[in-house]
Length: 145
Image (tube, rainbow, N blue to C red):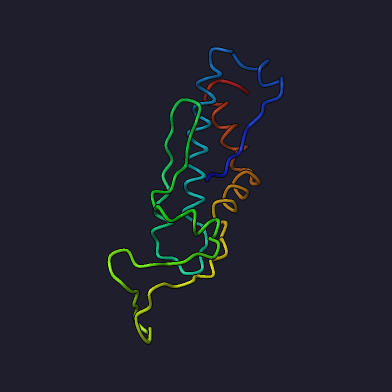
């Protein structure tokens, strides 16, 4: 499960830059965009935040691609939600929790609605002027005006 965005260039970019710089410019833009998106995700709003989801984001850059991942394995369930499902014990014969009247063999969970924090952060990032600022900063760094 992932959220993506693509970047397209018009012909004026190609006319203003030396082709030998294109790969380095795009690599720098991808890296800076990933780091900025990582920051945006760390500011996401949650109903009952534990801090693990906010601290779990990490940008990994390689070549022209940057992946922003979350090391917390349950992030897709928080972001996309879950459908109804049955919870059964793994190691015992019954389930019990504080406040339960008695142990039960299974629980029919109704599912949860997703929080879409990743989707919101990606749209907020791509809809802001941060991406444009990253482009301009990296183009200037490589001598493109």
